[in-house]
Image (tube, rainbow, N blue to C red; front, side, top):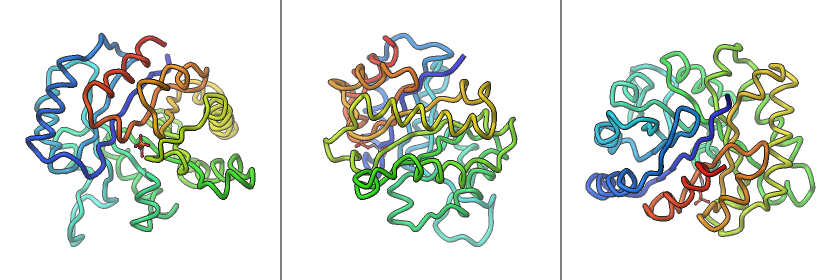
Length: 255
Ligand code: PGA
């Protein structure tokens, strides 16, 4: 059965003690989750060991990372490897977030290496895709997102793709307060699922979790998550406030 996931992407926010407090508040109000309705918290690298410790023994809530290097060790100053993340307690990792594509020059070939490295140690990737406003305005979003998925994921084996979730995050909706409409999200998610099915078959595509990201809030989450192909969300700004994040988690649980 396809998992519904709400993942909090804290980005470069919350120091260690602020992060501890946020995790505690989120856990205190967490609605009842299950094997198929899960939550991921992705703080900055420095917070991962403590977050993982706070989540240990908590069912269905997992620690994630926002990025990973593609080698396991070596002379890569300032980087963090898949094995390090795993040892610190991360189980999920965001790969290809639009902010990393834009500000860190992460391109398709590098993302392929990151996907392979993460999967090789058993980290579960959340592969991010999504178009900029000019592409949406030119009505090229379907081809653009399909190309991102093809470039980042089509090389994977059936076993590996089954470990991957996709997050569709239209860049024009990230942090802007302008969300995709529920209809736009559903349309794109169905397109993403069809793209995955065209290469991996419908069984694998139907099992894949496809999350929506971009100005998701408690007030719009239920409507967006109602889409048949929308399996939860990747949450930025609203993940930094326990009550807002929990409101979104509740919308996912209620689906
Ligand atoms: P946002 O960010 O919820 O603040 O729009 C989402 C994301 O970038 O993952």
